[in-house]
Amino acid sequence: MFSLEGKNALITGSSGGIGAAIAKSLHGAGATVGLSGTRISALSDLAAELGSRVHVLPCRLENSDEINSLPQKAEEVLGQVNILINNAGITRDSLLVRMSEDSWRLVLDVNLTAAYKLSKGVLRGMMKSRWGRIVNVSSVVGATGNPGQANYAAAKGGIIAMSKSLAYEVAQRGITVNSVAPGFIATAMTENLTESQKIEIQSKIPVGRIGTGSEVASAVVFLCSDEASYITGSTLHINGGMAMY
Image (tube, rainbow, N blue to C red):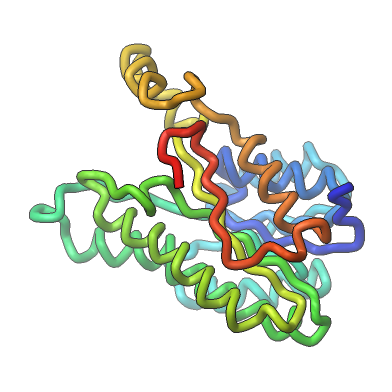
């Protein structure tokens, strides 16, 4: 069940907690994985941990030349990209009245425009083979909003809307496009929270705890599998009941 043997997956943001967990799970399901991100040492460590069927593909998603060339570089080492995981994301938090245009633009470029460019870059191959999976990582904030994160919320909400629109366009070509929207997930960022902050966050989550990267990754593996071939244009909210839709 949920075998991805013979499939090639490109995962952005692989040097982060959720991205690394997704890469590990896709690899564990049999896929060959292309690890993309900005922290080369973290990518190399993950590649060494996974062993075979893995390639490191560094890319700065705010750099147009690098992002435009990433799909071709991925195909050169992986072969055709069958699975694309648009996971990379950054924050530049500020109240909107104080937010600079640079902070707005950078977050939209990395979190949303990069997903558009990479999806466009791999779609022709998927359409030709009549099989493909695109999973875009959104956020609970993309559905609920969050003060101080107008740029991030706009990008993550845009990811959901873009996924639905693209799903319509490619559904008859055997390609599914879905998004996952994590809530609070244990990452290096959440490790910096104080104990009182963690307790306050957990009090807002019905299951009473912060989620794990592997729980997000399991959902991604399912959406990439043949078993999920009838699911497209959907958003799977992985937030412990923090926001229910």
